Length: 113
Image 1 (cartoon, rainbow, N blue to C red):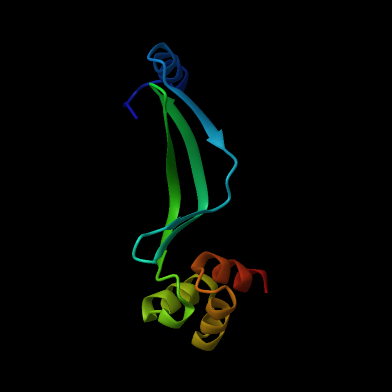
Image 2 (cartoon, one colour):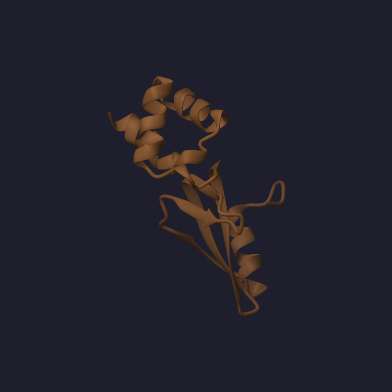
């Protein structure tokens, strides 16, 4: 946020300004985009911010983009899965098909095996 600012000071200033924030216990965030593709953030760190009656989410973590359709897997999707798990292209495609195009789920599945 601001350099050299103590987190307690920052929290006090935000409180004085009427800004509330609280962590959300989230493991994964999926954003379904209008074009049918998805943005998956996993692992996700999520903060709920409330200011002047408006609520918003601040999401940070590793972002993975997907077409959302397992038949549309791009070489980049497969490369990402292979890089993250050390699996073969066939294993990556299989995991992606089983997870219905969800890259994060496919990676987690292969890492558990």
